[in-house]
Image (cartoon, rainbow, N blue to C red; front, top):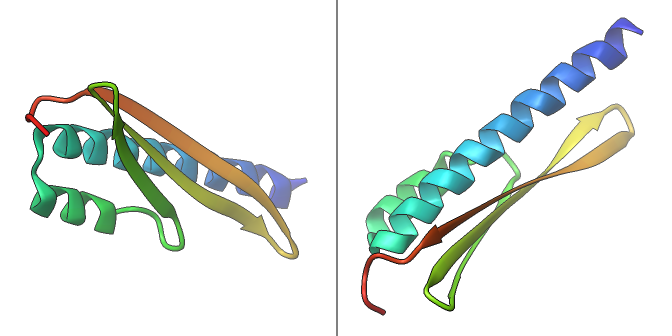
Length: 88
């Protein structure tokens, strides 16, 4: 029971970290700052995937990771949407 509680706490922390990364990457991508996007993406949790795209005047960033405990894993996903500030 304790191990499961610790895993849930770790998964919640991972989700928060993914959301913070998605928010920061989306803001910098919307501004057109490629260097800041690279730095913010590097702050993603280990093994996480960061996908950014612009469509319809918006930047959408999705950060995906896996919360693992032993042989089991659970997908964690965070998304951020920001209106583009820089002309494309």
